[in-house]
Image (tube, rainbow, N blue to C red; front, side):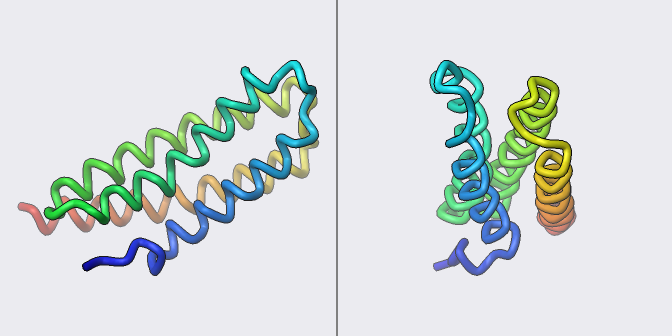
Length: 120
């Protein structure tokens, strides 16, 4: 059985989730069911889809879940832009988050590319 916890992209995505949760604790309380919820949901979706994909039986299914994780990473990136524009996070924090998201996205893209090449 494959262990998703050994995947560096999953490890980094999990760390990012923990960071997002810590950062959103400081957001205005009126954003609890808005931006806070969206940021947390999008960030959790990345490692959750990696884990779910690893539980599937074929590489084609795994690739599909990695694609979903990539979509969540894109959504998260926009939500970080919005958070910065609303001044809920500083420029330094947003730049660090962008860097993390971009790194994870590159890993996932390379991984899905490798999976799809093997499927041909």
